Length: 308
Ligand code: MEV
Image 1 (tube, rainbow, N blue to C red):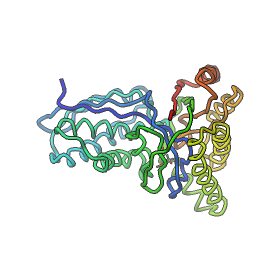
Image 2: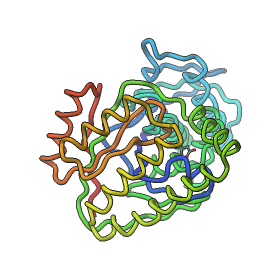
Image 3: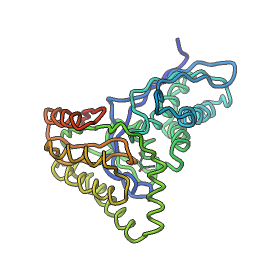
Image 4: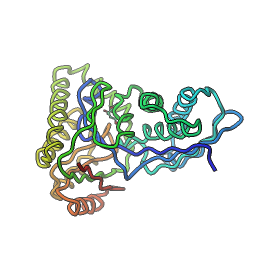
């Protein structure tokens, strides 16, 4: 029996990862198939955490408790009970550190659970502050894209903190496939920063192209232009690889998805591990792409749709 509970879903970045950090537009979609459930109870003092999030050999103490503690502190503050004791139970189906927004969803689920315990619904800006507190501990300097997408109920366009819902003019069937390898977003973002300092002209040119593709793809979603969107995804994978945030495993899953007839495929999120995202031509085709990706060594695959 719990005094409060909250849920948040996962996310995938369709276009604009990394360039979004430099103020460029990005498009991200909610992924309803995966999420985090949080339950909370008052407690005399301190934080007691029970979590199935970070189990196994990829367990990391800092990551396990850092974002959770930050979200709890921010949510207790927002609900007028700073420093109160709390017991938190988390259950997540989002694989950790694979670019699917696990840390942001943890922050959102905890914010909602503590809000419900306090008998109130936090407004979107309060909730965003709580999620960003978790994100900042997890990633350093998050753009804020993940925080907005894990609470969105449709695809969003995000730029410099501004969010707008995107209108969708057709059914888009995406396949997400997990390499099973964790990728540090902080490390990937830092590597792009270092490359940009060393080779300003080259890297700024690539970031500008990433920005253009994300911006132009808004119209593809609105008009249901699947082939055009798929082409942009494939081009963007090459651009991301050229700023060295891909990996041989990500490249090989992208190639497998293309061999299985995907309209386009790319890494999604920070990279250096994590997941790819492919566009299928139908729901049945998405299943074929999933099968091909499992045969190629993906540890998990999901089919997620974007509909009008
Ligand atoms: C992380 O999901 C996406 C990045 O663009 C970083 C960020 O937006 O903060 C790589």
